[in-house]
Amino acid sequence: MRAALVEYSSSEEEEEGRHRGGGEQESSRAGAVRHRLPLPADLPGDLEPEEAVTDDSSRHGGRVRSFPHERGNWATHVYLPYRVREEFLELLELLVYRARNHVPSLSAMEEFHLSLSQCVVLRYHWIQPFVSGLRARLASFHRFFCVADQVKVYTNQNKTRTFIGLEVTAGHFQLLELVSEVDRVLEEFDLPTFYKDPSFHISLAWCVGDLSERLEGQCLQELQDIVDGFEDSALLLRIQWEQIHCKSGNKYFSFPLR
Image 1: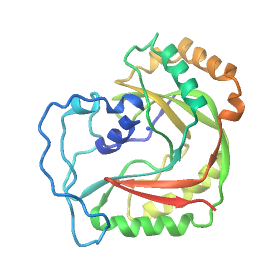
Image 2: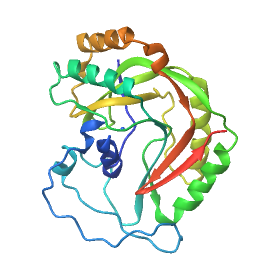
Image 3: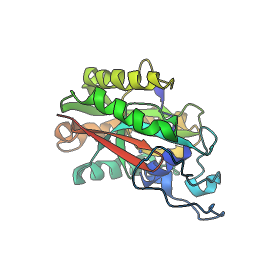
């Protein structure tokens, strides 16, 4: 099955590229980068530093912006970070190697997470109250486990990228509770909430364009067989979530679970 993936702005995609995907970061350094002043270490609330601006898709592996850059707009995303173990990277290598028989341009993620929001746009002066709202609403949540062991193919909303991910098959209720609280904060700022029927997942690899048909069917079954047959996969893909992150522009905020 194919599902819609969380939408990412170019700045979020660059993060994935470090990664939410291996390939989302390899880039040619062609094109000039606009000179910018250094950003402050804190968020005083009265200044509006400018983020780096570039729409050269060659710098991001062919990825394109999901919304245009405007000064003072900060791409913001709430998610659960997944810190991988060596065994997970071994499994990832096997999956990407096999999937490249069907889509040679597939790139592995370098960082991994599970999204609790879409990528939304915050004005600079909204960041601190938004983060404060999240901190208050998430303060009572405890650490929990989920299982992500079902291979699935996703595309982003505008069909410019395709992803292979591991869908959550246990722990869905706790994730919905978290999303409900994140959504309430988003609503306070009149921002889009999460999908009504989300497919919670961890993205493993990506490619430019809608190549979902080439990854589904036989390829998807081959990948699932690898996951099912991987040594200790049941233990490896049982994940304990310990903290929630919010990324806004180049700012990171952490909310530890109890």
